[in-house]
Length: 479
Image 1 (cartoon, rainbow, N blue to C red):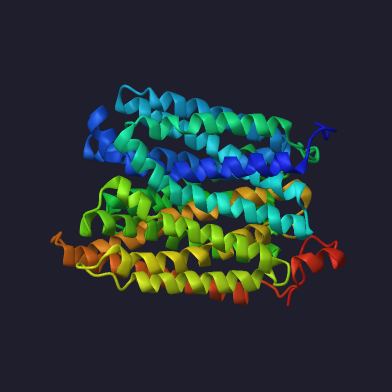
Image 2 (image 1 turned 180 degrees about the horizontal axis):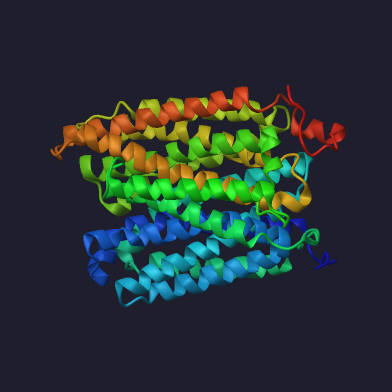
């Protein structure tokens, strides 16, 4: 595949922005409609959880494979394939007549997302390799990423209340069609590098291990961490992933992930940072949403409106990250953004059963939103810094995997701790106490992420200056 003479970088940026907004939106828009979905299709209490789990399993389990496919077969080609599958699955899910139909559609959505998410990010990285244009591009990407997640709660609430639950699935169809059109006009980027025989065994081991890992984590809402089911599932997942690492180190075929990639401190540090931030953010969305609905008594639509300050804060933080990115190193923005977000979460930890939106939610939402916006683009830019062009898809899949695993692990772990604090009494006082503990622990995870940024990531100059003195060595030097 060659570069199109009519393609423009703006087409790529717009396409990737729409893709990221759609994927982020889907992660939160369905959650709000779960009660109406259960009533409409006759889900049992246990079966309803699979509307979420089916997507999480296929998305988290196949991300590494999706990133490798983007490198091997072309980013735009894989992105178009993922968008087509995601759009068709959303359409099928909207017309679901039985619980099994919707669960199957959500699993297919996860497969499509696992292909399009790393392919879109790799395409963006290839189109904007360095300098001021890269800072702006990742600023737009981060704003759309966060806006989709935060606005998903609002849009999900409005659609569920006024149009019906089926529209939380249908809403993806026009966005997928728009992204398909834009992607078709985008620059396909450099042609995929010729490779050796694919590492089929490594791909099977990685996919099975990641899927079981996510499965074991998300099922802790039914089985405790110390139960035989959970311990067995996580033990088998660990064994599969250990076998995968052994195969990647010894295979004569083209590995799914070159383990030397982790020698790049930017890749290793950014993924560890991303895992902790993903754990903190997923749990915060969960706790704040429950606090608004179960303690303050707001409805789904109004709850969505109350998430707007956070969404606007993220957009503001993303714009600020672009402005500061010309003068400050990415590591500096990661530290500042992490500390600011941790401050907002600690403030959230002061929620009370007789609180109000204005006194308990508005202020910390703005602080945490701005902080999160500050670190979104730098963590993506850092995770792909110094990575060879033929491995950007793999690096992007790895980054998406760390966030997905972090989100699943954080929600399961902090949710368990909060539930233990709440106990069996679902009074406003007990619920508020449990949610507050979960939010404070989220702040602690963010502080740990900041420590990783300070100790693992190397000191660099501002990207706008660094592009003129770039080290051609793909592996950054140690401090």
